[in-house]
Image (tube, rainbow, N blue to C red; front, side, top):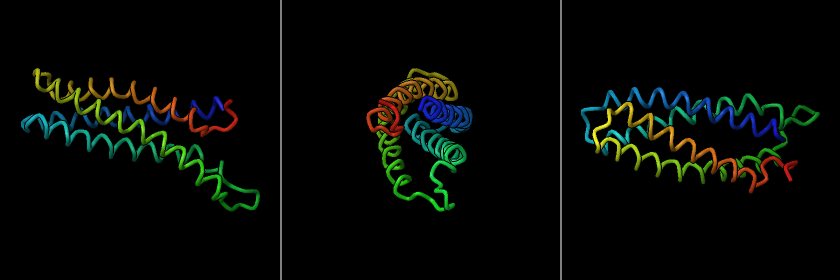
Length: 147
């Protein structure tokens, strides 16, 4: 159970690391755009990178978890766990998006460099996200053996 939490958090952090770097570069490229456009487009890039990396890592860490001895996929278990995971990540993503957008927009308004505004807003929002996701995973009992 603790190993499952560690794998989940590892995947989240690696995905965020990739998205932080690419989002910061993208924010700087869009530095001539208005603050709200820069923030919005940078957040979109953030999501594309994050979900691409996270999904890939999560798949590789869990691909054997749902195999039956016959070699077929345990669709019921997979479906139940995906519902719990999507619920947990979804709650976190809503809070993350609101925090990230507001913080980045504010930092751009007070003349932070775009790459720095993106980096700082994503860093703060990631901490909040990690707390929310871990609490949500515990509440949804994604990892059943966790009492």
